[in-house]
Image 1 (cartoon, rainbow, N blue to C red):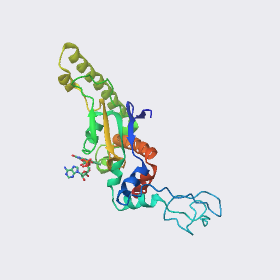
Image 2: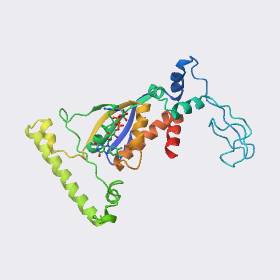
Image 3: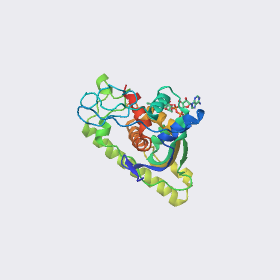
Image 4: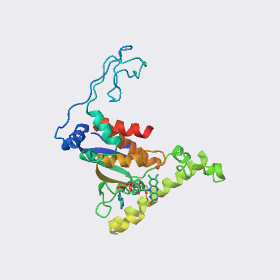
Length: 264
Ligand SMILES: Cc1cc2nc3c(=O)[nH]c(=O)nc-3n(C[C@H](O)[C@H](O)[C@H](O)COP(=O)(O)OP(=O)(O)OC[C@H]3O[C@@H](n4cnc5c(N)ncnc54)[C@H](O)[C@@H]3O)c2cc1C
């Protein structure tokens, strides 16, 4: 899979994945030794002819999602019924039988949030042994004007400073100068022989670094529940939604259940 760009210099790239929605069913069926039996058949609506869904609760007489007419075919519930049962009843260990590893490039401050998810596995580029590239996250004026999350974005309304576009532009220009200064102090340190592990004292939390992160599906969904949601900082949300997109491609049925649970 190609790198998926995130923010101005970041990316997420799938390294490898394992398991599937079917493997989750197989793992759950270890108790009965039956394995994966198949997903349910598609339904056809008698009124509009549109294809129905595989939702197991849509039995005989259920209404078409498109025209609200009666379905012609009786949906034969398949293993999606078991998948739904496992998810809804928090029988989550079968969801640990799948997962993926990704490579991520992001600002250091995003990694500080990300690494709080202790049950993922990480390997990060070490600025002790190799210099980090001269890449800094540069927010846009619009991003500055978005505010800072549910606790702080109302600052203007409560007597705090209300940021305006021209002030943001001036501040961003100063930030850009600081990035240049940071890079020049860092590069100069390395040039004159300051150890890289000390030269990195000149780095800012906006500097981009790289890591590999690996986790099982259950764990990734836990990450998304906290980071692909509006209370999370906007920058990590961008990464979380990218992870969501990859997960959706690999494990469409599980992610549909996860999304359904969150939209209620
Ligand atoms: C919107 C938002 C704001 C936040 N603000 C702050 C903040 O201001 N300051 C701050 O320090 N952090 C903050 N965090 C980080 C937050 O407190 C968690 O550290 C982070 O979300 C990781 O969650 P987690 O512990 O569930 O994940 P993981 O570490 O991946 O753990 C997954 C699950 O494993 C179990 N687990 C793991 N380790 C332990 C353990 N030691 N003991 C018991 N059970 C364990 C728990 O069930 C846990 O839910 C914030 C997070 C979010 C999403």
